[in-house]
Length: 379
Length: 95
Image 1 (tube, rainbow over the protein chains, first blue to last red):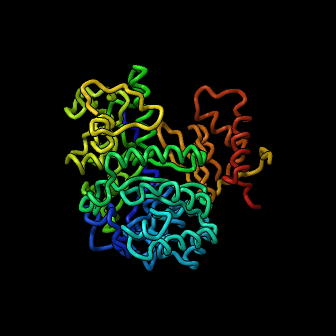
Image 2: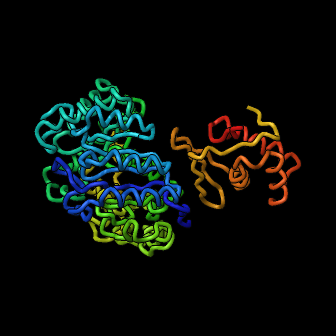
């Protein structure tokens, strides 16, 4: 297995500002290494977009902070469009207005605006995002819809909304008529570390979230998706448990640290212009925009080369994975979470470990609950 | 549209040629978000869609540059160029 590297990054994730009008309790940005106190000026971003255009980058994702905090956001987007790229925006939705939505629609290049909505009612959403922000976010979604800007929602699952997932799905897919939404859960980055007890799911709540989300995904014909968090874990773990029961051999691409293929196709930039492999790995500084040649960094920066080499690291070398019956079906999951929890990028991420979850008393959802305990495990 | 041999075709300047692994490439239209994978010969042809080379001339160049060129290469090139026109990636050069 050798890491595949594109000739240039296909997409770039950019924290266009470090400032935000909210302080959500589980924000991954604030208190992270990307939480910087200066934003790169417009002229520097425009110069950088010219370089991205020359490198044939296809898409840019703007996040923050809150991207709509930037008064020069239209000029920033014009710079992206002028360089033959498409864009998407990750937002809390509270600052969207008709003028901006009309502008986004008129570019014809907006893949989507993703708005964070975590509840079906004010009290749930506002619990961790601040009073009044549910109504503001819903209003933002409606304005985007009125202007025919593709809009999607990300639901962060936490202790206060885990029993409201049915109602959230109904609100988003039926009442608001969104084509789809995605989920994750309060993780281990940024402010969430400080507020973990208040926000992070317990084992029982994780179990409930998995069960509910898998049922909802079936009910709504796949309109709910996830790349991390309870839904993603529930689906992957079901597959892994099935493989274990059938005593299958190792799955292709599993058994190694293959949980992330980002370093082979994407890069990220912090608000201060520092180029990093991923916004969740903001401490690994590869260079600075307009000071370092992007393609040189892309092809030869030792840290990127090292990250790409993760896929050749077998899980069996880690004491954490010793004697795990799932080792041949596991990817080791997210390197950024691994770093946050273990201090090592080249390590499996413990938070998404199926064996650990079962050892902590967690259960898999219906159809997988029959008593077939793993050796040495107590329930 | 069936491009005649003598018609000059020009690549849409908005379309991005992203060369990927092993000389394969993607033609990316940022206005539609559509992306099309093309092989190394497709890349060569695309680079010749500059409004200066006729299909006949392009075929001659490919015959010279590539190895083991099939006899019906002209037909393949015509099909490829026709597809680029159909998908809005290229068009006839304005008179």
